[in-house]
Length: 151
Image 1: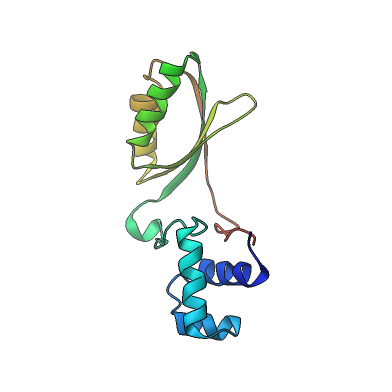
Image 2 (image 1 turned 30 degrees about the horizontal axis):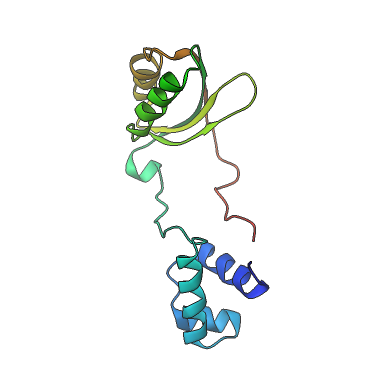
């Protein structure tokens, strides 16, 4: 179980994963060694899965963000697994969820341009034997950035 100190530590690291043990200790009113041990325990226990850099999509040439809903025609385990395996190999698909409701999957996609999105939909997703329907929504603006998880 997480105590309040653990929650404060996780909140601080979600804002800045580069915090040193000294800086964490200052924030939490702990010694650097106590803060470091807490961080290490949270890493070992799987609360902290990894440390990553958040890139600016436009600065790296990814000007189109879209959400793509995919409805499967065939729901057998082998077709579903084949679809999941295929989307796992596509770097422009940065995350995917299975859903309840009309669509079976929701994909978050970043592409260089509309042509690249069109290619992904028409040359990759729609030809897959399990896919019945694809519907995309192009993101016009992101009014709230991906936020840290609530702790």
